[in-house]
Amino acid sequence: MGALVIRVACAWLLLLQLAGASHVIYRDFETEAATAAAKVPPSIVDPLLRTGYHFQPPKNWINAPMYYEGWYHFFYQYNPKGAVWDNIVWAHSVSRDLINWQALETAIEPSIPSDKHGCWSGSATTLPDGTPVIMYTGINRPDMNYQVQNVAYPKDKSDPMLREWVKPQHNPIIVPDGDINATQFRDPTTAWLSGDGQWRLLIGSAAEGGDRGVAYVYRSQDFKQWRRVQRPLHSAATGMWECPDFYPVSPGHTTGLDASTASGPKVKYVLKNSLDVRRYDYYTVGTYDQKAERYVPDDPAGDERHLRYDYGNFYASKTFYDPSKQRRVLWGWANESDTRAHDVAKGWAGIQAIPRKVWLESSGRQLLQWPIEEVEALRHRPVTLKDTVIKTGEHVEVTGHQTAQADVEVSFELSSLDWAEPLDPALAHDAERLCGVKGADVEGGVGPFGLWVLASANRAERTAVFFRVFKAAGNGKPAVLMCTDPTKSSLNPGLYLPTFAGFVDTDLPDGKISLRTLIDRSVVESFGAGGKTCILSRVYPSLAIDKNTHLYVFNNGKADVKVSRLTAWQMTKPLMNGA
Ligand SMILES: *[C@@H]1O[C@H](CO)[C@@H](O)[C@H](O)[C@H]1NC(C)=O
Ligand SMILES: *[C@@H]1O[C@H](CO)[C@@H](O)[C@H](O)[C@H]1NC(C)=O
Image 1 (cartoon, rainbow, N blue to C red):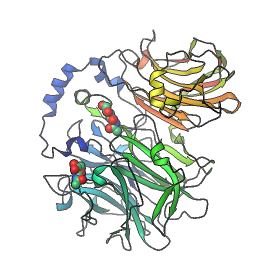
Image 2 (image 1 turned 30 degrees about the horizontal axis):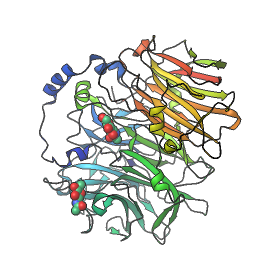
Image 3 (image 1 turned 45 degrees about the horizontal axis):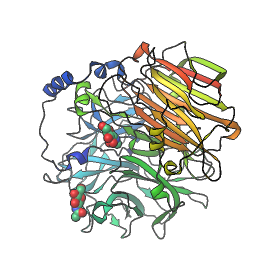
Image 4 (image 1 turned 45 degrees about the vertical axis):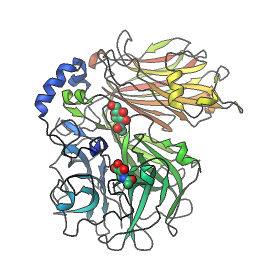
């Protein structure tokens, strides 16, 4: 059966910046690194800011995810020669648990006429006989990023590491039709086998001069000849869609579904796209009518409303169905948020978020996400805080261990919602602006309360992850905002410190709300209310490094907040590609 075995990352990010300049200038990275180092604050190149348990190759620039059976495989877009986008190949790592990684040889690099000028993102699919196939975008012209789709097969299926890949003669298998802009035609999804015996996959594209994001369906009987369905599966006025992802889910079921076998009236679909213009991943939940070859979001405003997987630094993600644990796993990429000079000086750029299990909430309105359980094997030395009331303007330090690499779970109990501030209707749909105005240090009614992570001893440096409760105009219902405020995260000058925020769809049952934050030196990855709202940020402290890192719970609201329970674990380092 069509268990979707390998999945490949999508993310091929910075391409656009180079799109105009396909004659990329060759750079001497060592010289550039020396010059860059001179311009960059010393602490930012501190190896102690390099993440430990987030996926990373030993050096250089990365950006893409995947999966496999027995062994998880991760293929990703990688520059073997430097920490900036260039020379992109498909690098390859394998793992037994999605946490400990071993790097293998490059899986795919330019070698045939239809990928001579680049091997960009794609996906993998397992055929019914168990053969994994990689489908990826190739660039076949030197003068412009003209995109076609290719396939590659394992040379030796009996090698569980799938080290070598061959590209059959019939490549390319899909070329853009005349009505498609050939420079906006990429990132094939994993294919699925439908009840009518045909394979289907999606390709991300754009129409109307680039204004409209489009997902085209291609069908095939034999996986060789592919024909486009004239009308797209779906489209919206959002600009180019990169890295589309399309998969079945079932409300309230935490187990995942395989796209080739899912059926039944309760099955819903998620369509996710990476918005090239805005640089984030958004999704809608809806129904898929296979006969009409159309997808319709449940919420007619869904394409404008923009539910996001993550309201922070998270792009070009993909999911895969993991048959060994019957779950769907989401993996996204987070770039560095600083300059090219920083990246070159550090010698590495880009990490993967912690893989997340993803499922549809029982209301059917949104997805829930939670770090895969395997990450808990890295936890040790727990420290606990119980039934601790944090009064207005107070903070409590969580002492007892090092928190530069930690996993923190906390449950808050609110004494009363009476103090909640009225929600400004002008900002009621703009969480990011709301958080920009009402940051962690702006006193409120109910909140801001939450964690200060990666804080220095004097708290001159601290990154706030917090909630703030408002009263919605009209119905007076609680409107809960979740933010990451990095504006005080570093004394290093000139860093990019965006405030990230999203609303949390909760009525605060019994006045309770939870937060989990994974801290990994320069990553702060948070899950609000059991994974309803997620925010990943990159921060580069100058003082709060290694042993000089502190963790606090704070409350800048008028209403008392009780920490009913907080547990913080130190995290050990897994095997990470030999680094
Ligand atoms: C095709 O896409 C490119 C961006 O990749 C854009 O610059 C160009 O204007 C588009 N062409 C048309 C005819 O829309
Ligand atoms: C990466 O970092 C830059 C800031 O340097 C940011 O503007 C950009 O949107 C980020 N994200 C992605 C997905 O490219």
